Amino acid sequence: MPTPSLKLPDELKQTAAEAAERQSVSPHERSAFVTDALAARAEVMDSGKAYPAQEVQDYIRAYVQEGRRISQPKARSWRG
Image (tube, rainbow, N blue to C red):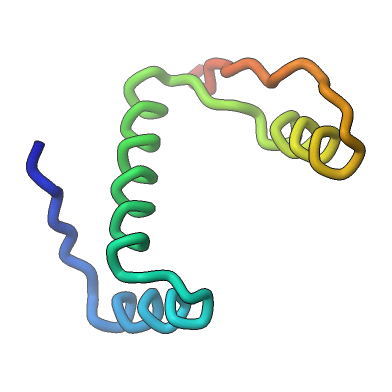
């Protein structure tokens, strides 16, 4: 599968590079993250389903902060 190429404005590239440097993220890791994010967005757009943000936050908080396991959020249609 070919790697997609994104054409970003120079100012945005510089901002991303500076943020990655502050977080010790390599350009390859940054590229993989962007590729994954674009694939996830395409899946959401194609399916018309996404996870409600508050439910995801509650799920993560319960698991990470409190060590509780609660039901995983369910994807819901966001299209009218």
